[in-house]
Amino acid sequence: MGMEKAEAMAYALRLLARRALSRARLREKLLGRFPEGEVERVLARLEDMGYLNDRVFAEAFVASRRKYGPHKLRHLLRAQGVPEAVVEEVLGAYGEEENLEAALRVLRRYPRRQDKAKAVRFLQGRGFPLSVALEAYRLVKEEESG
Image 1 (spheres, helix red, strand yellow):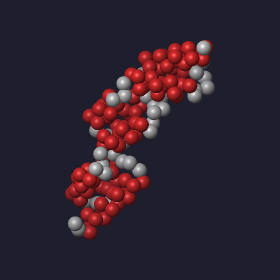
Image 2 (cartoon, one colour):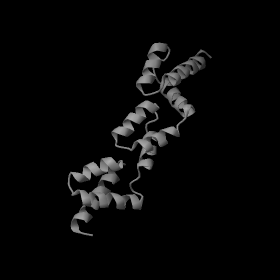
Image 3 (cartoon, helix red, strand yellow):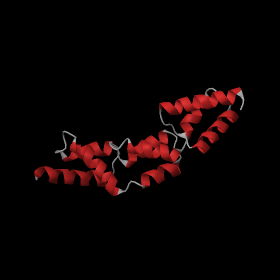
């Protein structure tokens, strides 16, 4: 293990200790300082060690952002460089029911939730599909009119 590889590995571990990163993001950061061959070896080693896993990254990313719907989450994951297959796999695990739960949690805290147009637009802005936004509005209205 040459000096450069040790440095690249140490730097990669420091970055990952600060916050989870997708493989693509980490690769980008390492390429700013180290040669490509070195970077690829370090990434492969981190994957073997279980420190770098796009699926685990994507699942944690989604779990910590339950205020967004699937459209927005898909966009955010892609922006993090998560491969399309992983994005679909992780978001596919969140069915209509989980999306509705998330939409309800968000809508219950929205002050203008009685205004249908505003409530639905607000949820769509957060990345929820129209069907989910309409159903969440209906349920919240029902809850509140008792």
